[in-house]
Length: 407
Image (tube, rainbow, N blue to C red; front, top):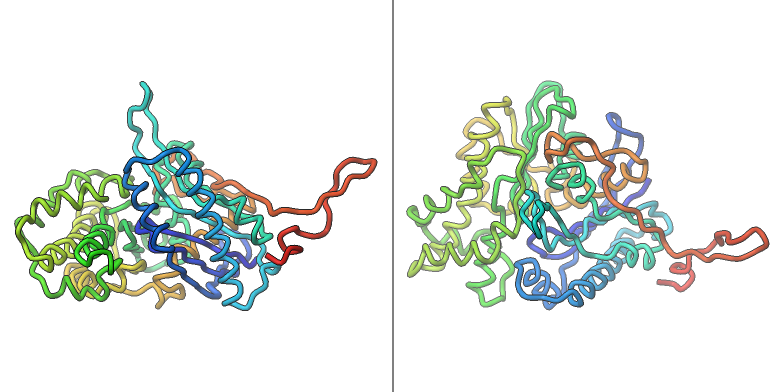
């Protein structure tokens, strides 16, 4: 099958679209990245997403409207990707859309007298299916949460398929808005894999770059601002004392822990410091917290022969230099060296997860999410079709309405 995987992360930079060719089934599933495309959100949409995701005042009407608007933008991104890839939408068998997370609380919290864990991704999949004429699998996380898991991380299933090795123990490190690791011991079975979110990835640095630039820079490209600064040791020590880092896996994090309130706390701790020094401090927090997680939760449990890095943080030279120094003799490799570029990996992963759902196979790893049982992830939305009535009742026509209208 040719499958489009679509993803927008916690930083809400925009929509990533990966084209994957997938065949067979685990443990012999074969998946190849054919192409990749990324499109930024319009600035007002990104601002609205971040505001709502930060828990700022909103209405049910705004969330509903945003759900459909983001769905339309995902559909447009899918069609734009098909044009760029020179692949007609009719050749795409399936779309896997992660959507845009606006709330994630993996641990149960008390609500109306009950303990409730919940997650919400927007980007209406029915709109994507209707506009593209392709079936869409979306809303992947709730099934794992219904099975007692945290709904995250889900990419470890794909990390295991991509990186398992009979002789080498590997850690797949993704530095997105949040940083997470998948630990794949040498010769691992799926049940041997464990994974967790280590803490902030690019989220805090991006928020500071946006703030310090007056909204002109969504991130600190090439760590240029951070490199001009000196980390504030006292502030860094306070940040590294975060209780989250001490929690044992499985665990997941998001904007609820490391969003605007966290950034304001950092700024209060660094009151009076140069902006470059504040950004240098936030930038070093990410690799240092990752290294702390590896030493605290990974190295005592598994031999690690190499670390494979992906996500936007893979383009940050300051983060990579600190990671390489802290890893010592353990080599740090870029994901593209193993066949899937660091920018495309998460979108590629949701193409594979959608493929598994389409074949009614579970694709969570309970050892990663804490679920009691494997779960078939996601919900399926079908494209519009023409229907006709006859004496036997309703039957499906041959032509998609979306393709007939030329959309």
